Image (cartoon, rainbow over all chains, first blue to last red; front, top):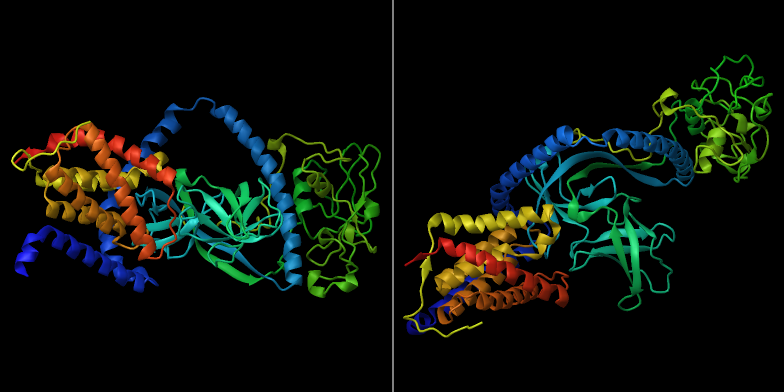
Length: 447
Length: 172
């Protein structure tokens, strides 16, 4: 026996070493529910490598910041101007979206929907990768010390990135959505078809489990479905770039991730999600149209004695006072009649809203304050119990808010509506009383 | 590209200083973890594998080769997202094979090194996928086009890297 072992010493040792590793693997696979059994040796390896990565990232960022902030300022002024314009556009878009969100909240409340929102995020910097072409994962510079835990969603402003797979004191390993072992619940925005998002050996992303008889087209947007209990519903995932028949009865849908996963630098870790029934805020709010109205030129608001005799814009002013356009929500609203243009004012086209549900069919909760409102339009209800213009005693409320009309056209100057605009710098810019539906509250400042 | 059979007396066995033995694999692991974030195309390379093949072929000792491969592979596993041991097993086999081959063949010239590296890259991938799918039940898929391309890229990089690492060789 000894002679055999001596003769095949090398082979024996090879088999022994392989056996030990196979044994170790088997133990890990058996206890795969949590990776605690290999935690210590992983910490050693990570602690040995990540300090150098941090140092290099820090030096690289310092160098690039020096270059960007001091030496490479050419064209900054033009870029600044362009960005300001972009901000104006986005503000308008934000107003429109918040109005839509408001409507969605009301509808969700009607149906007693549970909604899940991102309550808190922690920004983190990408400092390294797993170092393998076969696994797509990254290291970030935040760990359990900063409140990171496993299975937290990792996102960017563009879309989802992956989930936290392992957490160390000051570092975390994030499994990206293009890893072959990852799986994300996803759905197509238009058709609401649901599937599972997976990575391929080439690092691409495909949407699986969509039946081949469904109609999916390149360009369709893919969102998170929330079915995986990790990513909140509705986050951007990517865009369909190719659709082909797949295995069995399913389509093979190739998706271009919304975020460039190969060039990640900063990410946000969703450390807190909140799930609650959709609730329409009961506090004093400013309607989206009112916010827009404040941004547009108008005469100062006057206190109104009677609600029916609401103030209108002064002659010469080319904007008719929109209903409840005052910054003060307590100001008395105007009836549609009050919006008729004075000489010099531009005549607006009052279009009825498409919602024609009689108020009797709506539960009281749908109309946040009731107050005898017919509530046919989601815009027609103002908090504070004061009827707005659209709350006139009609079954279908006229949709007269100038801001809404302009915004619904996707342009500051909507069709059939002339709005004089002042330079952006002249406009008052009140803070939105109600932020966008999913603000990312961050614990740290940006890097 | 001659791959010549060499008698045991003709084989030159090399050794390396301790800093090189420890530092080069660590540097390879660090670069493998760091560079793909800055240069995404770099993820196609497997520096730890190249270092394993180099040390194994230079030392020409199967036991030394398999332990080198096991150590580097396990360290790579520790940094990755998958269970520890998949790379360890694959690189153990490669280390053993490369050192056994180095003991029998003269693999000092560029052509031989290119072929050997390509071959061991594919062996490494085969063992990795076998273990990952067979033992760990991971849903990994093999892409031939990508595998061959990555093998060639690693072989080309390996030839250059080996010439750099040759500077650290010490004759026994």
